[in-house]
Structures are given as structure tokens and as C-alpha cells.
Image 1 (tube, one colour):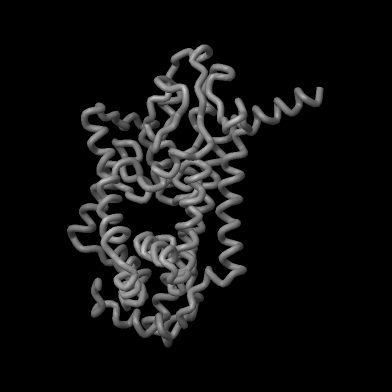
Image 2: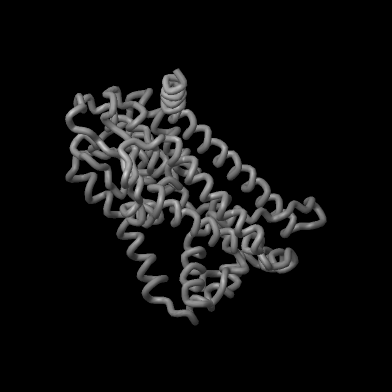
Length: 341
């Protein structure tokens, strides 16, 4: 009787996995909106402290500075120490890399606010019937775009920049105000930038997860790392009824019914495929040495790992920037005169 209750409870939570993921994404997205408001308020205070009330600068805003985090990560490996200007950005970047190594591309599937936006747009497009599927001869070349962008940034930063160049960039006034530059870009985009962003937004309504699937270089990096993740979705061909509900539910358009193990760089660890599969014991989540792992283990571990990285950074002094507010204030007021080094 106890075993039956456990099985019913397991089925109950598994059937609501999609709602759990949406809730998790929503909370992170709302948090990003909150820190965006906080940072904007801090930015306004920095420009005019007499008119605007002081609001503390939120460290989490540095999550939107991935190129600076890549520079900081290489400096860390070369022995230059942890980033003291944007330490939270490096912490979040390391957390995303660790999650991908051990827990699929779970950062993309459960935490990233862009992933949440893509999820909501996909749901809308499915309901309205405007979602299109590209043929393989177009889809595969488009998939290579994010890897080309990843290769470009990797060449510039990981291959081409030595410690001296990395340190020069790290200490530059541009890096210091890169968060304000990012804000400035979205508040006052050029005609070209605005047109590109609008184009990506519109295309996302007809092509599933357009940015994440084809253009995000960091998604490409996380996908490469996720290839060695011990967590895999397994398919039992003998029980598969070839309904293809898993492929319809997969945000990454993976041809799941052609595989026995979903070891794919595009898999974001959302587990939507396992949830919708109507055939018993057909699709399961497994790690080496097991045949069927509780689906809740993956999101539980990835959220635990993410917040563990945050707590360690907070305790060790690697979360809050060491730059005084007065320095940020001084350089923010010079934002229009500071260009890329």
C-alpha cells in the first residue's frame, strides 16, 4: 500500500513537471525584472544623486555580461585571481558551466530568462498554429551559427588574448561601466540594433526558440559541455508506439524517436518529452548504473548547485563588487565618452 502511494505521488509530480518548470522560469524572470528596475534606479541616482533616491546596485545584473565573465574566467585560470569588479557575473557563469557539465543544459531550460521568453512565445505560437518547422537542409546550417559565434569569441578571448591583454580589458573604464553600457544599449538602441532585435522577436513567433536554438553562443558552449553530462533521457524502442508526442513537446526539436539515448547538445534538460510520453517505461531519465531516475532529481540538483555557488560566493566575498559607488557614479557620468578598448 505504501509503495502504491509512492508511485501515485511520483506520477502526480511528474505530470506537473511542465508547470514546475514554467513556475521556476517565471520566478527567475520576475527576479530579473526586479534587478533590472534596481539597476536602472541605481543608474539614475549615479547620473543625478540630487533628483533621484539612492538604490543599491544589484550584483545579479552582472549575469548579463557574459563576455566579461569569459575574460574573468580565463584570468582566474591564469592565476590572476577572482574578478573584483563584476564578481557576481563570474560566479553565475561558473554555475552555468557546472550545471551543464553534470545536469544537462539545465541552466537554459530552468533558469535563463531568455529561455522563459522562448517558452512563452512557443506556447503562444502552438496555440495559434503559426509555428513552422524548417527542413533539415536549412535547420542544420542555421544551427551552426551559434557555434561560429562561439568560435569567434573563443578565438578573440581564449586564444588571442594573453594575461596582459585580459588584465588591460579587466581594468579598463569600459569594463567598469559595461553594465551601464548594456542598459544604455536597450534604452537607446540604434536603428540597426533596434531593427535586428525586432526581427529576432518576430521570427521567434514562427521559428521555435529562434535565438536559443540558432544564435546564442553561450547556449552552444553549455551544449558542448552537456554532452558529457551523466544525466540522459533513455528511450526503450520495444515500448515506443511512435506517436511522436515527445518530438512535438521538445523545445529543441530533437528527433527523439530515432534515438535510444538522447545525447544531444541541443537538449536543455526540460524533461518535457518524458512527461508527455504515453507509453509506460518508454522514455526515462537515467544516470549510469540506473534505469529510471526520479525526474524531480534533475531540477532539484541544478537549482541546488546554482544556489550553492551563490552562497559560496556570498560567504567568500566573491559576490559584491569591490568598486565603490562613487567610482561607478563618476564613470557612469562619462558613459558617452567611453568606447570599447
